[in-house]
Image (cartoon, rainbow, N blue to C red):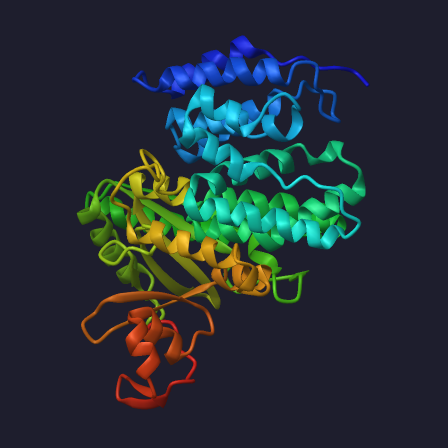
Length: 435
């Protein structure tokens, strides 16, 4: 095997450009020195120095997820030390870097014991991870970045290992990235895992996806919309995005579909919120929207904090989804809302509390199949409203009773039916998007 050293000085230079100076930034540099010493003379199967992996995980957090807290990044650098280095213990990490960093590292550290029952051990490993994330959601942020880097370097692993990691990603980590609102991460994780799981079919689909983007119709749509926005002096950056393999994956049947209803999206970036609504008006005049499909996630953000205006149209027999956002909204949509966040804050958003509750449930021995719970949580959403106009986001195929519990536990316990518009329905009535 050819050994490939890691350029630490280049890495330091890259991270200096990302990290701000502050009272805690020294913790990161101390952790880098500690991790470098701990992983000295350890090598990955690819021949690369092992320290490259934790350094890459910290870089993914900072450069691709906007997680810039030096202590979280320190935990990323240290996340494999306790597991892989006999001399390093959680107590030692706590002494050197504090209880907060130690708690994140502990949450990321796998259960280690000999067991002939691999399935039972795998469940224990996952439940420990979920329990750690219930206390400190940062644990899952580090784990997702860790998984993404492992997927990016998966070619060096034997085929059986690739399949195991791909399956685990599709069942657990990619859906959880969706739940956390890390959509760029989610798409790449799905796409990488699927190309390893379905190499021939995946390659054929990717070729089909490339051809979609080169078709003349989407370009004509962009041109027409660009001309109409320019006529009224609106600044709008309009682009086409083809959906990747992730959109073709049927998680219920664990197959790749040959085609989907909306393979293309038209993305529109505008200067500010007021301009977003003005662009929506131009869009509606240019291409009539499909009834009941306009969604205002600027006034009513998704639970993840996602904002934007969505509209669907049918142009020459083909359906298109338009997404209108400011540049900052688009950035948050890709990277999530974890910038400047830590669980140490005494005040947490409702979204964070809901995530902690989910991890608490799936980390419990009594929760049944955590894979099933994660699958439901990460599935396509529908958007429902109270009579007062409050938005509630629910998994697809939810029923009235799910909506009632989402509004309030007491309402759920007493619910026997509901009024949807002018229709009286039972508590088991399946709800539709827009109800």
